[in-house]
Length: 181
Figure (spheres, rainbow, N blue to C red):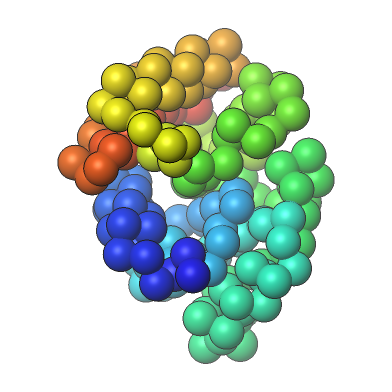
C-alpha cells in the first residue's frame, strides 16, 4: 500500500534528491518501509553501501523484493531493528535519512546524538515530515519542521536548511550537517 501511494513515492524520491548522494557514499535509512528510497539510494551510491533498518519484518521482506539485485550484489543491507538498535558500522556513514518516523522515536534527541556519532564529519542527515493526521494543513507542516529543527540543533547538528514539497499537506525536509570535531 505504501509503495503504491503516489505521494509516498514522490516524497521519498524528493528526499533522496536533496541529499546529493555520491557514488561512494555509505547511506542509512531509518524506517525504510517498502524500500523506495533504498532503491533510489542504491542507484546513486553505485560504489558505496546502502543500509536500512525498519522495525517491521513485513517491510524488510517487501523492501528486499524491491531491492533484490542490490542485495545480491552486497550493496544494500536491510535489517529488522528499531532506531534504539541501530547496528554498528565498520566505517562512518555519509548520509542518514528518516521519513515520517522521528515522531515515533523514544528520546529523539538522544537517538539523533547516537546517529550523529555514526556520521563522518560533514556527513548529512535529512528528517522528513508530512503530517498525516486528519485535517493536517500547511501550518501543521511548519510546526513539524520547527520541531525537527529543534531536535537536530539539540543533538549538535549544524547548517540546518528546510525544503518544502508542495503536496497536500506539504512535506518538510530538514537537512543538517554533522560538524567537524
